[in-house]
Length: 522
Image (cartoon, rainbow, N blue to C red; front, top):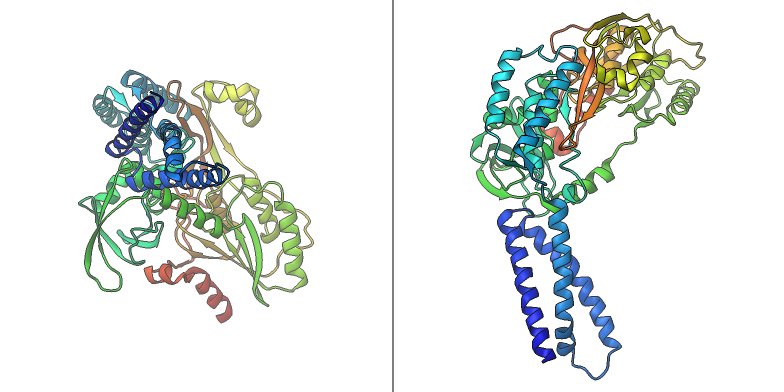
């Protein structure tokens, strides 16, 4: 009787386990390869533990022992897989709640932003908005809702106005998402693979993608752009090659890639997935290749190099700059390269501190700005702190012109030549530093046009939508950076230099090498 009950329990558990597996495969919550991997991750330790337990059991055959443990194992698998499904599945959103949040987002952007309809008229936007709302299904997933918000904010063409990924990257979602399994670069509207983020579906580096999901690259770039917030094409090309961004565009489904193989020129097709292994590979690459926020090294006895890759290190930046420039002076270094490629910004005070070491005249971080007052900003206290208590008039805009920042006494101010490296990922405070450098730094700029533009909407204010909790960023300031021009263009280098696809394959830093040659030949 007991054996029959145990068999019945095992059959019920097996059927339930099978249903869960079939659901995961059909719904594509997780790709099949990850299901197998997840099962093995649980199965192998279980077998090891059972084998150890069996060593201490006497008078029972091993197969009989395993049979007695099958039910418990199936329950463990059901619980684990059920937990994974629960944590990575999108929570459905009712259409009416989604529309309420979209209306709240648009109303808030109109209230907060100094000129949200600068690039598109309100009437034109409203036509698009009504069409998008009309097309929403009765139930919408978190990913679909995020993509809808990204699509709407992309119309405004202002890089700091965008949804964040807080509702689509919770818990285990970021580990199992079917992101694009390759690192790519856009070069002259062509897409090239520069690295593989997968162990299973590798494509030779340097191969050119011809189509994705039967869409040519021009169509693909255009569609990717519809989910990105940017002002310049330079920054767009940086944003849209993000693996997660491409995954969202594809609703985290399988990719069909037609490409021209780098070494042979042959056209080939692959159907590929990202998933757990791909995300792990990418995470490992990032952890091993991550650059420190600030670093200094001597390239040669006459050339120093500062890597300045983020404006976030508020704890050590003063000590870093003081010790670095003391070393530069003691070693009589005559040429200094400052690398802000990939610098996405942060706290401008860090860039201001560096300017005190390399500039030889009073300077400005921002020439002037226009700020818009809103109830949302009044509630944060920012209006009081920045504009004054007498300026709390919702809807009113206030202009400010900033005085030049005077140079401090600095015994280790650098007296040699400086060179600034920039690229299309130099953005926000990074672009602000580049603008000031071009206007006041008396140095040479090498690389690509910055992703951030020289007149832009800045100073981020964030808020959350009431139903979904999605975080939205937007600006309440229009900033005119030094020598800036209001034409949606970034800081232009003195020498335009970009990596070729061969440079990416060989990991050759053409921009840095060009700068070193420039110094040595002067």
